[in-house]
Image 1 (cartoon, rainbow, N blue to C red):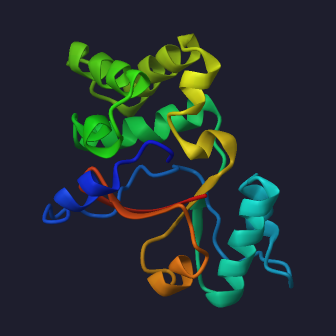
Image 2: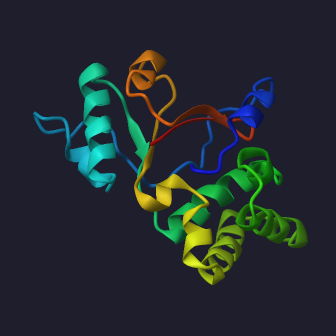
Image 3: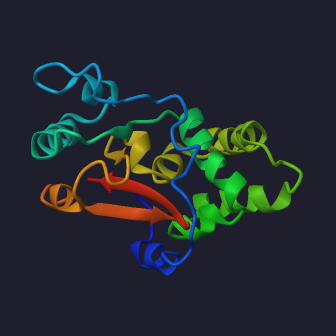
Length: 183
């Protein structure tokens, strides 16, 4: 995610929360059905070609890696965020660097305390993102442009990820264990 604040990321490491149960619901990108080249699940991530190459390199370095997310449309981005907001109402402000878009999304959450389901929150965040200028909206997350993927925590060694020289490798987002790799 482009606007994640890595410094804030470490502030929440002491929180004892499980792996985010809502992260990319329905995205079953396991290794059962992988081609010999190991790229069928990577192809389904719909990443920019250079980022897909990095994912393939990660698969070569760590054959057991499980990818959980790649490019997202606005509705899927909102749903992924909403699943985290249900667990922690301040997740957006605790995860992302403060920008106009992020402040607007957090303000929507704050001003709708009765929206307490993933569906309700996702609907509100989707509507808000759709109303933003494209440049502002695309700055919310590298997932929106195909420049990031997430992997199941501990499905590969962290050294295999850092060897890719990502712009960003986060292991926690707003207190939740989520491995996010951005380029």
